[in-house]
Image 1 (cartoon, rainbow, N blue to C red):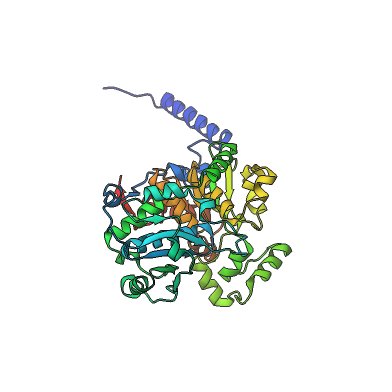
Image 2: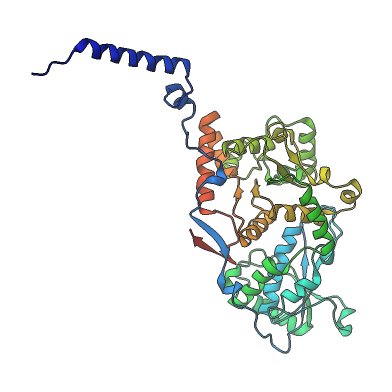
Length: 440
């Protein structure tokens, strides 16, 4: 019969328990601490770029590997694409015009970039893009000429208005007859024309123009490269949209803005009055209101972006309330602070936008608070180069969560989950027409 002594065993247990209590009291931040678990409920939370992606967007093989084809010996005439707005809106319209010219078997004359006081703009296509490279890269997709034949050059093109056409608008039925009659027409592509109606060869021309043929002019690329070299690496390029015209256009109101910001917004409103009451809440919850710099900083922190991150601010002139970002993220750079004064003051809207475009494509990571023409183009170009640290901040999620009263750590975790899921599947990261999903 074996007998155990109870007293020594009890003494050992008592000493062990005492030591454990002492560790918990003296070191409350240990992994075993209840208080630590309560304070950090997502111990496994990582920065957003460490999330494992499920798929990537890559250029589709059908146009990347398809190559060019022999064009008809005779074209049906000449098309000039008239482009309006900011740089990337004009780029979008011009790329559409390339597809249309291919569709109609037309010769493409270099586009006309409209002079726009609103955009502080006077530069033309050749001031921004490398013309010779574009013509070379489009060989076999569409014929491009710098100048018109003498018998046509002296007259203005016949204007074909596509802008107000309905969704069933067809270029072959509606535009080709004018091209055949006048031999020289100008168009602004209809925004509501669905490009999925294009034949495959016309789509290929559009993809080739957007993602392989358009590169910055040598002068502008040199200046952009010099700007890129001045930014401390690694860095995040942040496209922040909180200018007076953007806020006025959104028809949103914000509490707590400075007097100067309120005045600037009111001056830009014109006939666009802000929504009020329930309509304003519905509008904001649909994600229609631009994120403020302060809201942007809050989301970046929720995504575990360190506050000492180097940030290049890709933004237009007149950005408001920037202190809401720079008070939290202190290593913020802009083109106006990095470029020599004479370089910057001599530049116009398109060339300034081209700098942001170039830097954003070549940044270590890219985030945007909007889903505009520049953001779509930058994301697509980054995807074409295998750069997938790209994310669009969700205005809709932020509005919905804050309208429900979420704040502090609860809001932070909710924002983290939404953006984690978006990043995993690359939601909104590329233009679908020329890119295909690639499962990882």
